[in-house]
Image 1 (cartoon, each protein chain N blue to C red):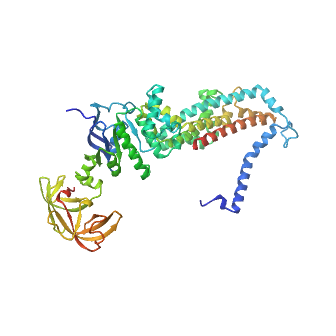
Image 2: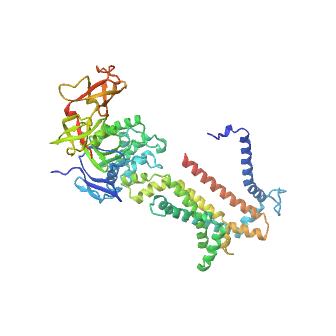
Image 3: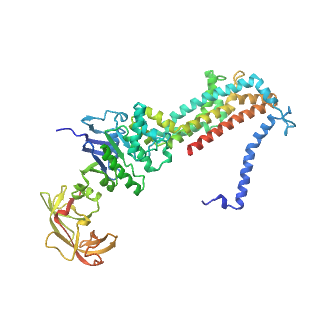
Amino acid sequence: MLLDFDKLGLWKWILSAICALMALFLLLPILFIVALSFGNSRWLIFPPPGWTLKWYHDLFADPRWLSAAFTSAKIALVVMVLSVALGLLASLALTRGTFRGRAVLRAFFLTPMVLPVVIIAVALYAAFLRLGLNGTFVGFVIAHLIVALPFSVITISGALETFDPSIEDAAILCGASPWEARFRVTLPAISHGLFSAAIFSFLISWDEVVLAIFMASPTLQTLPVKVWTTLRQDLTPVIAAASTLLVGLTAILMIVAALIRKGKSR
Amino acid sequence: MSSPYLHINGIRKTFGDVVATDHVELEIAEGEFMTFLGPSGSGKSTTLYILAGFQDPTAGDIKLRGKSILQTPSHKRQIGMVFQRYTLFPHLSVGENVAFPLRVRRAPQAEIAAKVKRALSLVRLDGFEDRMPAKMSGGQQQRVALARALVYDPPVLLMDEPLSALDKKLREEIQHEIRRIHQETGVTILYVTHDQEEALRLSDRIAVFNKGKIEQVGTGPQLYASPATHFVADFIGDSAFLGGELAAVASGRASLRFADGTVLADVPMHGTGSAGGKASLMLRPERIELAAGPGAAGASLPVTIEDVTFLGNNSTVSARTGWGDVLSVRLNFGHPMMGQVQRGDALHVRWQPQDAHVFART
């Protein structure tokens, strides 16, 4: 290899240092908030003078936090299911179809990734005002589905592209009807893509805050919205505890996604 | 007249303006090993896909035991197929791959177990049931694919260049296995390949495809000894072609005039042509003799030796005719001329009249 890492000499150390600094830059705020959630100061002081689990007690004792977490989970689960189902159908059309304008359609499906989220939020807010969907569960699901779908389409069509359609033909000649072949052969063979799409879709909805702020009502709030509104009223370390739990679940799901990808490449 | 086992009846398939196959007509007997041989784009694979039901013909019919199968969807045709690419189901073990056709047919568990074991044993992969396809070599994967295609005793087995991804040595080994499996099971096989050696080694009969049409159907020796067209003569075996002009044509025999005025009379003629048309004289290298002068019997031409290449068990001699065409002559090891022929020698090539063929060129 032209750029063999072991033969870079001094550059090896410089590159390693840059990587370490990047990792620190990304991780420090998270470590900071995790540390604060266990600190016994009421004022978010760093480093904390002592340690406590009080803020977690407060968090779980407050039904508003729990209801926000429950709302978040419900929305994320529904978004996950719909995003994988629609993403699978769209990906089948994009990878197997031979119709005109396929490339344009694919690019169109990916626009929510590049469009500023706040613009989607304002547009949806305006549209939902007429439809009466603001502050409703359905409104949340639609809003999050829009930003989750591109990730589903990317991962599932990626998996479908590496799956040789001849394998489906072979299943059909073996006696399986076309739909049976898809269910018994194609879907299991791209299951790693479906799982990744599910995890990413869940996470996108679970972590999303901009759209959620626009959609939220006093009675229907997701966890990130609750964190944000609480932060504006009161700088309590309970926020740090809630954030830590959010990060924790995200980290676990990311690790699961990475393991699925590793299992697939084995 | 009894109807043939499998009858490909005037199949024509067009994609827009492109004609993929044009009136393909073929009768295949039960238990026969029939190979479709031809270059890529000659329509052999299209014909196979139509049999499999992946494509519908524009015109024509396919009858199995006298009944048309074109209205039957692919998954109900009961046809077995081994593909060019590896098509084992990646998430299933070898045993489950082979069991798949039986499972979709809702066969009882005991029957599945027994048939899977028998099919794997047929391809010499006993005990591989629990192996995953990704952990197997290409040759093993194609053998599992063969077991999967045979496990439900299909009336016809289609094979679409199944060995083209394998290296030469492995290919020969599996050709051997396929031949043995054909003999043991007696299954009717339609095999597609562009490799003439593979076709000759495996088949009972070969259908030579060119530009969407079958040029000739016959056993290997028939195609080699009496090719019907220039294309077949060129595609099967080595051959030398000398270009000339038809001087006279009468009842399957022709006189051919070469550029230097030499005329060869009374040569067997294939295809249609009339005096004045272009034609080629075809000779097999092992049928040409090298001699100092013209013989008493048979045909001969004066040549100048261009080059001599020693190849172990034989030497190949390039000889140039008076008008500039080059033909190669094979001298087996131990031939009296071997070691004596040299560049620039003026000699004669001789052959028996029945070994030459004239093909009209269009």
